[in-house]
Image (cartoon, rainbow, N blue to C red; front, side, top):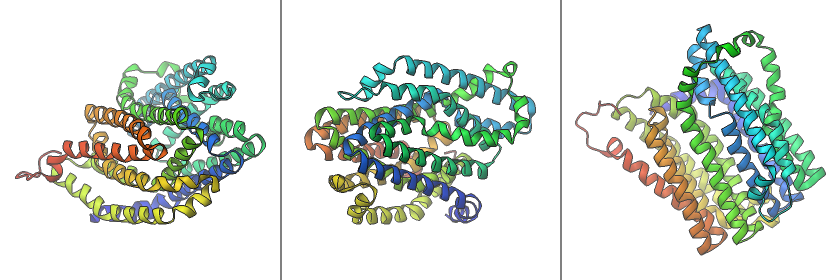
Length: 435
């Protein structure tokens, strides 16, 4: 456990967390300001529509970049001192990824009406917003591929600064659009927000003109594409399907219990996202690279329970504090219209607690490239998340959505414990064996 504490002290709190924490808090504040503006100028019904569009946008953005990001970061970092391999990696990512984003953009643009009917059921026609999103999507792809290069070269400082400036720019434009155009402005801001950051990233690219000669069509390599694709499948599976499931649940709520209740559920999920940002970042920063280093059961078990002993009590206290302060939180982030959201906190917080417990162990799938374990467990989570939500919505209405969230992660955590049970709890006479 000393290793985790040393990591937090030496890396998270000193080296990059001052900036990383600033980026997280900037994102949280940006989200809170946007949520407040939506609550004041649009209301719960509009928030439900915005949630549907955001889920659609997140899924399509993941498809557009083919899930290349993490694989690109890994291979750029690995090959940064080998010009030939670096050129092949960057060229493959840029050209294949950009062509993919153009094809996805065209598909969205010319099917905007059909997409509108799916994500905005029984409501006004916002097909033009889908077309705006389609037009700016390639800039999002260029931005993410540029980020992968900076990340691969360990340019964390400039990367985080760009994110902070991007968040400030994004929230400023979102607030202006919401103020001037209400729901239309909010939807447009969701469609263009991530792509706008490319304007800032462009400055970073210009300052690294030495990389430009490395990006050449003749250096596209399908063997490198094959290497990247192994990371893509796992990245795409949850990045695409989880937002689609959220969209499906919200659409079910809209059709069966109304737009307003769907907006209240979206408000609760937004609050959840805000308070989970910090712990999720810590897990991603520490657990994944640490698990990648581990090659035996004893150390794996020590790290998991060490993390549980160190971080989970703090998380539990934080969630308890959030529950006690829920009336103030709802009032600050939203408005009096959103008072029913207070009744959703208990089940959401319990579900989020189980979610964190699960993720800590489940990162072993990614660290050890346990492809089929990852796919099967994620598919299981996606299926039960939708089915339990629908089941409990039919029984309890709005509250059923958060009960479904809790039950889903309870079942998911149980499956994770079954898979890693022998590693975590088994009596092992040879604890040095491979994890």
